[in-house]
Length: 300
Image (cartoon, rainbow, N blue to C red; front, side):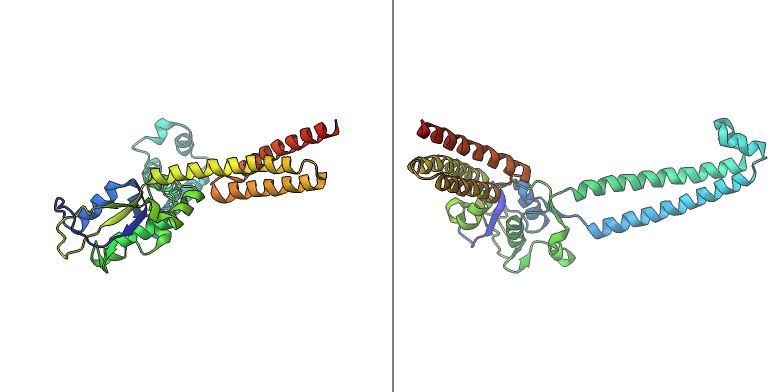
């Protein structure tokens, strides 16, 4: 079942469920019950600031290393400095004060560089996370604040106000046709889900309605097959009906059906541009071959 269709419902006299204190216990259960509810803050501002601090710290260490290298370069005739720059045994010599200074600085760089690179890689993965769908977030917020009383109090009641700073860990993949069905025909798919947090201290039943994704996907698949059949069979039937008309009329019908096909594929699916071009070209080829064969037969 998909959280993407959560809606707040009115309290009802449902069967008693195990009591769960409203707050972190009920909120955690709400998220765990459906993967689509796994919506969290990504703290983009704090993450960017942390990376900037790490970057500046590394930049300062880099400057210190360059200064040490510059001082070493001045002692070009120093045999010990030359050996420390070329032999590990001299570089790791505990009695070489300058080499010890290098090693101490290099240890700081190694630790800070590792921390910085790990932060960069984690930030890259976080930025790749998808934001929650608008309908999912709307239902999520409705559950979070029921009857003007948020689940979490204090500063946490404003956790989910900034939509740009939210990520969905497991968003449900839906195409535009499924979204259309959810938006305008939701009454046909909704199922009532009884509240799980039984004894609410403030008498709030955070009951919700589910729109099972399997039912929406099944309806979308049926409609997709119907649209495909109508566009293909309808085009062939129309072209057959005008087979005795001029070629201009038939070409006009081909253009019309190709435009309709491209419009349906582009608006009702998540197909990429290349996929839209490929599917439209294949559809156009079928119609052109059909007209060409019919036109050749009529000449004979």
